[in-house]
Image (cartoon, rainbow over all chains, first blue to last red; front, side, top):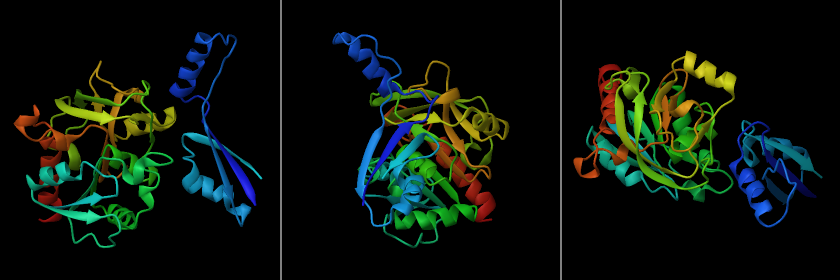
Length: 72
Length: 225
């Protein structure tokens, strides 16, 4: 089955990529944007979706610095 | 001291690490697919871009066959030094605490930095004096040391922070200016700066030799004795 894993930087950890985007938007006239964070989307076809959490813990994310959410 | 230098596809500082290790003993090259450490006294996981650093720096290299052997060697008390990408690999492998995040500037940084030796004892900094300064280059994009604040408190209290960037020299936003940490037992050490690039007067500094000399002294006293 098709699954998606959303990976986000953990709350409270400095996210310079999000900050760079947040600073760039007003320069293009997009005002009123706050709390930008940049993460990663991993899409995959899996035979056994029950193994997705283990895949996330062991390889797809680093649980010390990232949170993940599985969509299936 | 016989030192094994791991080469992953994408390693690029393995040659300098071999040359540095040759100054303190006999270096041997360990290929990422090897399952035998050839009886080495110490292992260096060098810098570079192992497996292209796809996904996260060091994330894929930790599953290389040779890393199973390196982990077992480390668990047995063997000396393991991770430099730059090697530090990232050892953190991903949970052989060292914490993680390395992109530099706050998001830029690749290549410059000489001043380091302060926090602990002038142990296998990796025993040839230094506490508080001594070392001039060693950094060159990385993903070098911001991070661990949760209670973990940082614990690391500092346990004496696991061996090197800090000197005031004003933190190039990447590392928390508490941490440049290098060891594991609880003290036999695994990782740092972002490159001691193997500071071993010859031609390179502008020979301070990096202090790390390799520390390792040799430790091996001669405790392993080969």
